[in-house]
Length: 249
Image 1 (tube, rainbow, N blue to C red):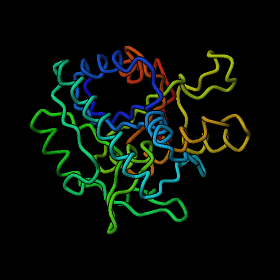
Image 2: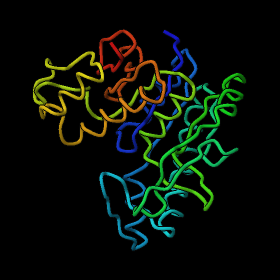
Image 3: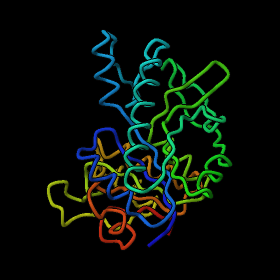
């Protein structure tokens, strides 16, 4: 159970200390990509700046981008420190370090972008040295830094490395009936996931999670999974005992 993994840790997950214990114990190579939406929103509110979303993405004018960078950098350092204290030496990176994430701005959203290229050489260099990269979803274009959705950043990193992507969130996976845990789909192909979305089985907040998992596959990840962030989750996902795994047939 030492398969290399890209793990995306959402900013809304509770009990991050327990997750750090889980990640610290994992025997294989890891790259951790993190979000920070709730903390970013709290800081923007504290500074009197508006939080507005379009299509699930936070509209980010230049003055808000400074706050986004500040918060994500602080979260990355905190996570890297927590992993390092647990015996997994970790290095916090921004996507602008060594041009790790090159981006392209999305129209009408300010400094919001998507990843167009991943400089995986830096990640491989750190991994070969025994370090765990902790990546903040900030990309760089010709005009400066870009706020990137952490799910899509994780998918891009997984595709560049050719590693599986595990998206840790606050749900167990995709359910046929959201109120019945026994209806969890343990495995879905992209075609099956798309059909469930068309039928309305995948709806609401599950839609962007499934789209992120499918995006990782399109980028080159061999498989991806959505699972609830909890103790033992990585082993359970690898054994097929937790989460929903997405893979081509």
